[in-house]
Image (cartoon, rainbow, N blue to C red):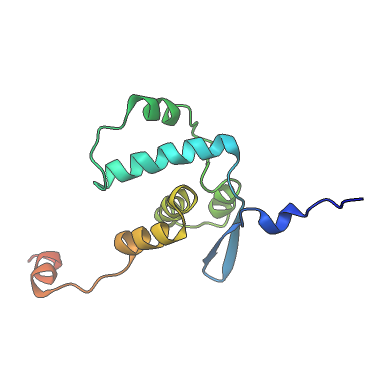
Length: 134
């Protein structure tokens, strides 16, 4: 008699997000959430200027179905982050990362996060512009 295969070894792995000594584990999105994540990725790429807009009507229709208490990229981890007092900007950055991680893969998400969030060395012109004015 044939044995059943263990699909756990073939399943999409969780997304592990370390932050300040804690580790947040995000489960892979459901089929329903995946469509929403792809729509979020399209919107993000348009908003960031990676691709030209406008956002297609079909994509906007999907985005309009996402309610304020829904978090398709982070799932239950969103509530954990809020409960742990994580700064909203950090949560937003983690959400952006998760959207692109699930929609485009780790390499794309890592590259985009580095471009968007990594500290930068400012050149002399940028430092002068950023310096407080008297």
